[in-house]
Image (cartoon, rainbow, N blue to C red; front, side, top):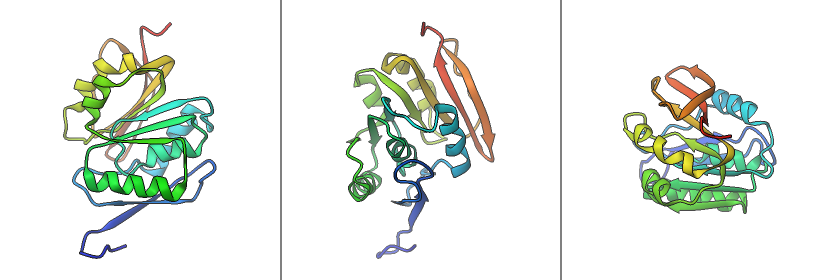
Length: 188
């Protein structure tokens, strides 16, 4: 779908929950690639199809595919963080169109937000630009953001070292995407 002025508008479909089959639109942006349907389906199978009672944090929201999917599946709250102004505007437009009142949007850098945020998130979605160093910088801050038993979903362009504070609970690979679910080793 072409946008007036020449920029391309992309779309992705919500695959489950109350807003199943609804379409999210987002602009082209360097490094922006929504989590593929097949990977999202696997992720939400790992998390359980419904997220009732859960608080979710999407630190690099991008298209919003993960955050809107979590809200559609009944999460009590979904906090979405995005720094790109055009992409953030698309998130605002999609949130209004979908009328998912449980979504809070923040225009901020994911790393900066994570260092200032208060904890008690059950799920943190971490899908930063593949060429960035965000994963290694963020992982030390994430344990403090998790509720007891909380998990971190990580998506990257290659295998990465989660370090000694994290254990890989589940993992997979689809094309150029490596993804895993991490649990904090210090979580009792």
